[in-house]
Image 1 (cartoon, rainbow, N blue to C red):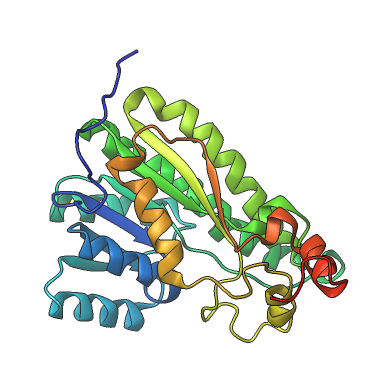
Image 2: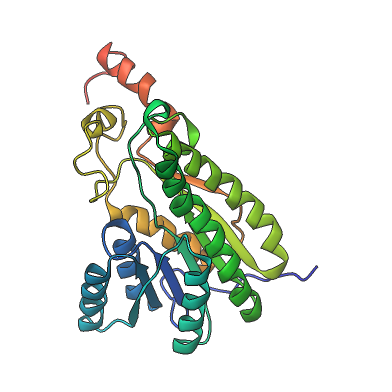
Length: 272
């Protein structure tokens, strides 16, 4: 088995020469990641089904002097993934980083879930990530290595009212660990970032949002840029010995949000 040595020096702030692909990046959390990777010097590929927003995002990045391209892409389609890889090779000739960020939620429980909705959520959130890893790994193997970061959720550590969403994010953990082992000898690292509450267009009007914030020990939602920073670290050479890991970015919610809230209400922890 070949050993893959760690590059010397602090590399997190230097992604010059690297090509990063971020799915679901026309807006919200994905766009925040794209902006940070571009600032770090990467050539960024944005892709989404939202053509107008994606085009505007790339135009803004280009105006700011960053190197970026947008491609319409359906993560649930194997054909779309093949075409996207061809587009990336035609543009840059390589792929170093993949962030599987695309995701949807239906907010339905088991009793009300139609099969088509169940399949939609799993096709985008989980099958999309599987197809992305499968497609990107071939390019990364040819380049001698790379980094893949899957975007999970702290819903992957408990039950969740949207059963398909919960299943897709629990599945992301298994996919991450399996892929990390399979591609380790190729120099490809695979990790998973699991955010808690991040207020974006996908959940801005969610009826349970305030309740979740009330159970978050740090007392607020994460900013998209804060999630992006963790993703950037895992994609960088500074994380060269990190693979198969899940990192929660949820302000302590999973660590014991219910216990914390109970303790606060009982005066055990004192006033904030």
